[in-house]
Amino acid sequence: MVMKTRKIPLRKCVACQEMKPKKQLIRVVKTPEDVIMIDLTGKKSGRGAYLCGTEACFKLAHKNRSLDRALKSPVGAEIYEQLARDFVAAQDEFIASQSVSEDDE
Ligand SMILES: [Zn+2]
View: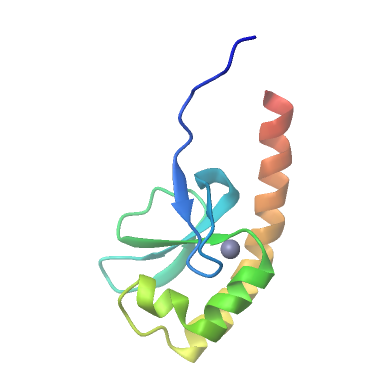
């Protein structure tokens, strides 16, 4: 029996506080220009916060203002509205990309 001990980078979801593998989370980033956006590539520079790839966690983050705290910046209502739209789109893309990477392995 061989146990794989490959380390998976874990990140904490700012909404439900669960530690999860990075690729199961969606990154929200505040860029150096103070623009808050969803970063599906995970490579944008700036302060990042992670959320589970589910609408439920996004809604929880909105309710608890978890993103504001994680990004150390007030997130305006219009940003949340935009994120809500982007998040649903991102969630679909995210799920699609997850199933693609599973096929690769
Ligand atoms: Zn979560």
